Length: 260
Ligand SMILES: NC(=O)c1ccc[n+]([C@@H]2O[C@H](COP(=O)([O-])OP(=O)(O)OC[C@H]3O[C@@H](n4cnc5c(N)ncnc54)[C@H](OP(=O)(O)O)[C@@H]3O)[C@@H](O)[C@H]2O)c1
Image 1 (cartoon, rainbow, N blue to C red):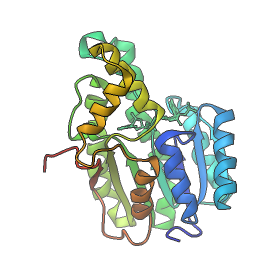
Image 2 (cartoon, rainbow, N blue to C red; image 1 turned 120 degrees about the vertical axis):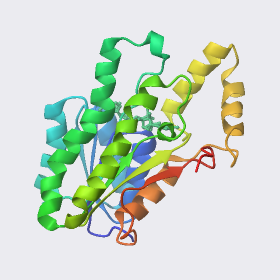
Image 3 (spheres, rainbow, N blue to C red; image 1 turned 60 degrees about the vertical axis):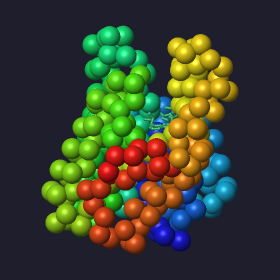
Image 4 (tube, rainbow, N blue to C red; image 1 turned 135 degrees about the vertical axis):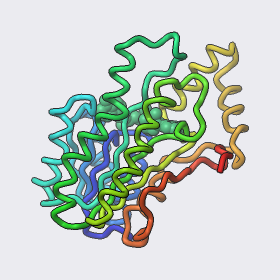
């Protein structure tokens, strides 16, 4: 087990990528605090992971766009486990759309969802990691940091700030042995992807099946990832084995992004 006895926070973890990551970290022996907005679904996910792995899993209802909600996440981890070893930041998907379709409110919301939530969570977790002189922060972002996608304006623009955050924090937190990295996943089989595929099918006047086949066909490995395949990288980065990796933006995309 890579993470025996460690405490990890995973946000946006009731389903999709966050849930897959939580499941793998629990299998690797971590105690978890998981957060998202829908308390019923979150509690169901927590009990599923508990019964699959025997891990302690504490759910916290929190909307990542609300400062007071975010504060509850770290507070809960400290109350339940007395400290934090690993912060895995994941968030909800931003609205798709072309630049001309987006309102000022869409931009404000996306900045809260994709940037401020990461800043708030990191601010809250850091004092506890600094006190231990040890910690891992892993931001789950998107391939759009390296390859902007045509209809994902908000993701293409706002998420890039996380790359700056990773590089800056890796430098500033190295003296405390806090390692900071980001995961740039490509297409992963989740409800979000189905939503994007439906949007594309409607715009291109094609069937959903046709679009899903075309999306898989754009990936050199010929298929989308399973959420747990993102979790395997996160577990490694969170473990003592990844002791010299910080400031890295690491792709898990089946070969999709071809720039160097
Ligand atoms: N799937 C992909 O192929 C892919 C590729 C690149 C990037 N991404 C990005 O990766 C992230 C996860 O994607 P996914 O495919 O797993 O999405 P998903 O299946 O739609 O799951 C989203 C998760 O985020 C939570 N969430 C949404 N808004 C939230 C908020 N305001 N506060 C707290 N939790 C919130 C949801 O739970 P509640 O509804 O309970 O809040 C759910 O657990 C997204 O940012 C997405 O844009 C996904």
